[in-house]
Image (tube, rainbow, N blue to C red; front, side, top):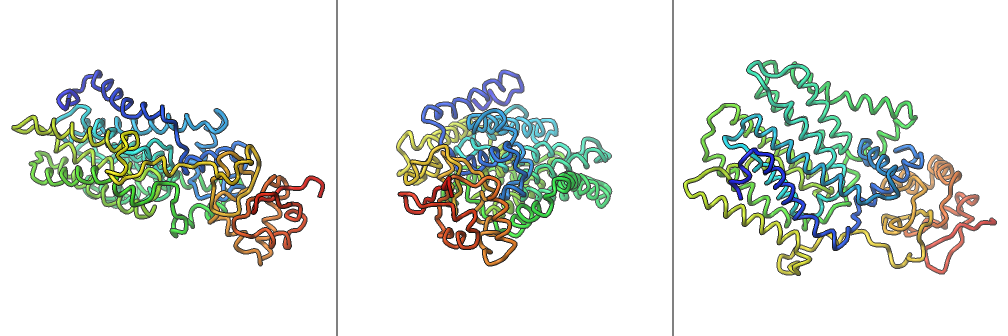
Length: 473
């Protein structure tokens, strides 16, 4: 099988796509569980489709380009989960093929073909988390697109357009997921080892990075929400106040990373014992090490719980895995290793179907999917507000207030003794009060006292903690 994918013929690409679909499509028969990240994206898309202004009418830290995409997808249909999954797969395939193209074109390894793309997609299928269209997955696509612009194509080094384009794409990636801005360090290292005029070249890279943010700041300035953009996106993310809770638990992710980490360590060890003929190949190897270090930093910024964290390790893992697949005297060893990797990926991916969760001690990702809260089963298709961090009631209902992220909502609900917070609450509820309020934080008595004209209209239902808007009061 390995020899088959070492060819550059188009039939190898067709075989690669068939292999990826064979790994993923059978799971569709078991249904598509809704992940917390997808529920958040669907709610953001609904609010933006209704005309809400990001950060002004929606308290959430999601980056603007990712949120804008969610709003565009909502134009296709109401909560198009299938479209999210198709787009996520398309982005992962694009990343794999683009990275494979860069490796072949730059001659970073003596052997060409689709082995790099095979490794990328194979290890990217080890978990269902990468089936989710997350801001991190979206932003990582632009990083892969920027990689070719970071590599010189001539002896004279870079030209101005390539450096500016690389910085621009890194800036666009950061507008999808802000911690990806750390990849400027990879760009700086690439400039140091490849460019002749390091300072001037890095300034060009930095100008390209800042250009998307200048455009975004101008947009929010004219939308009269520039302070909110800094308050609800830049400041919480930079200060680490917003922890990513949409992904699988950290201990599950670490166990899923055992196989990729083992291959990465084997590949790095093999690369140090392999003689690289060209100076460029040595520099590229060093750049992949820096890429790996930055990946660890970004994972730490997301506290290891950001949805799609695994995708960050795929480029350096793919590169160093090439040293495991290269020709050796005993040609059956790489073939056997590839078959073992494919078998391990199938076992881990289908562990729930094969009833191996207890054996592997890795619970299925479906255990952390968003299910409707049984206590609020009578609420379906309603407009509501949840005063608390539990977003499960929104699975079958609609968000009509700005308060999506409960931690960010504390800017109002956590300062009820301040006039500005009470005034903002009254403004946010007056045009379209929700039909139901689920009070998990016990705030409604104080809200009734502070803003009786709005919250005094809510009457308790037979379910404790659930209040309904009275029509004639």
